[in-house]
Amino acid sequence: DIDILSLLTTLRRMLDEEDDEEILGFTCWALSHLCDGPAYHIYAVIYETDWMTAPLPPAGTRPIAPQDGVIPRLIELLLHPSPKVAKPALRTIGNCVCAECTTPETINLSERIMPVVDYTEVVLDYDAVPRLRELIDHEHREIQKEACWTLSNIAAGTPSQIQAVIDSGAIPP
Image (tube, rainbow, N blue to C red; front, side, top):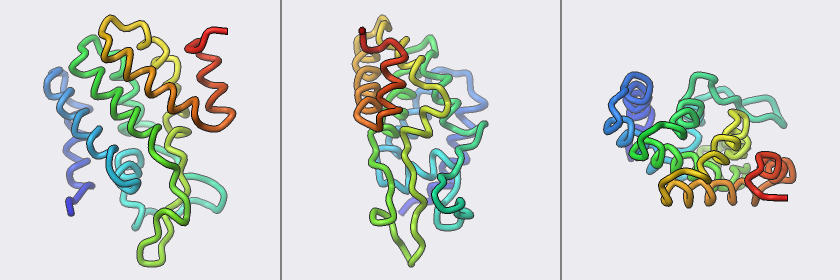
């Protein structure tokens, strides 16, 4: 098993401090692969903490992702001029929104229940849909496809998530 929090500390620093498109791209790919794994990896990437030791949110609420966290930075990188950065940032966001919501039945280790999280809502909290909409018209077909895949996963969600996609203009009237 990997020490994901130590890994995230390094990835976070690289994401925040690097301007080199190759380093940013590889960092985004690493985050993408983490978000393609189990729910507790996605939780760690989004909240930058281990759910086993983090304080539990009040009943009926979900934890709030940090304003200066990885998700806002990834959403910013969606519009990076280099496809080497934009595509893996997009894949990471896509992996987050296609993840199943956690429920008390899905994660229960050592009698501690992982908080209920709808990862799509976290991404929507940071206004990703308008940026995803912009990517539909991107000059690179692979980015167009990834943006459509991500938007389709958001549109497969709750009524308010579907409405967010409709309101963005991604689906013509």
